[in-house]
Image (cartoon, rainbow, N blue to C red):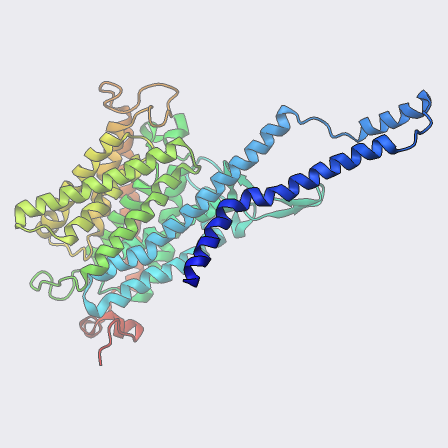
Length: 508
């Protein structure tokens, strides 16, 4: 009974509280007004001041009044607020892309290997999060984004010079270097997340058999001599960039979020590594089945979510194009999952969670270079095509050519990235992003002009040659000096124990 009374009292308080609380305030205001009026009426008359005494007081009051806000000052306030929103969104995207490496990729890859190697691939992802970050802060960002145009970056941002806040003695305050709509520190962090995940993707090709030490050395060299120059060519108005104008090769290519820089480069490097290091023991005679598809499915879902930061964040702002890139990313992933599952259902008679997971990732890879340049309906087409083509690459091409790309890094990222880069030239439209001052650019929109398609194909070929040959040289050198592959006994025991002295699963 008491509890009911308390409830009724609380409800009445909530309903009547606002007007009741308002009454004393209004009363006080009225009382003050009355008091002021009474005081004015009852106060004795003061002798009137002369005109000379009044004038200085009026001048003082006028001088103390703040100046009316100008249009420029109001616009500056609006700009500052907008920049804060852009910067905040980009920091969220930094976290989303880092989330893709671990736990996303770590779980996706971890579930695909055998139980005795689950920690080894997770360790690769987590360790690369640390090591590649250090390299990026020391020199990677400068080599990739220092200067504009040309074949190589410079030392402008070495050791975070020109990136971090600094004190200006002349102005007497701290200065924040800016990069477009965000701080340069934010831009550095966002691009650094790409620097982390790209070599981690390659690890899927040589899973279960490469030495951890060899992986570390390869990632350092690959990030320095392959990733940084390629990034500069594509995203810093270098020779592969559409925005380089007359200096671009074959007119340059459009790559919104990393089709060439991330996926094709890692995919072809993964294929070279798989061919050079050789197949796993027992391949292809033994099944070598994934040990935990639950991990893989959860990892794929995390990648799907994180990819919104990867693609939509590549607008480097929060605006209408960001929303478009977000939407087409989601649509392509959805179509990729449906297409892959449909094909394997027809071929194998059963739809699988591995197929849905792989198809979604294939769709995400394919839309990456096109996310800012295509509309939603073409994105569905691209995702469906990626699901079908990547399914064929992973289920048929790999077995025909007899290479052991353990976790299908080339089949999904290399093939999917290549398809996406070329289809960007087909479906790109100025309605998504007008990069051509109103001139139709895509093959379909332009009515058959192959200029952009040719530029996309040239960028793909250059990436294949540069990343493929470069990776071959680096891997050969590493093999000569420290060796690439673990001993047969270690491979048989599993890399969790032989390389790290740990087990992923311990049962009493």
